[in-house]
Length: 71
Image 1 (cartoon, one colour):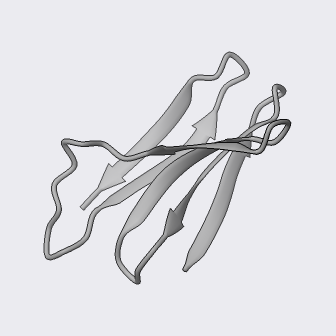
Image 2 (tube, helix red, strand yellow; image 1 turned 120 degrees about the vertical axis):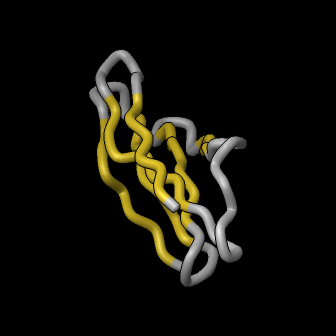
């Protein structure tokens, strides 16, 4: 297991991704004021050879986030 924090905006929303296995990664947003997590995975992301990757790599102050998908 691991996690990476890759961005934070002025509203205190942190973004990144975490791994549950050696191969799959899942994106998340975390509101540091409330501690609430939102987990993001593209439902159309293919699972190839048992793994998929969704990474949230940045967030703007209005709350727009960038998602990197790869397989």
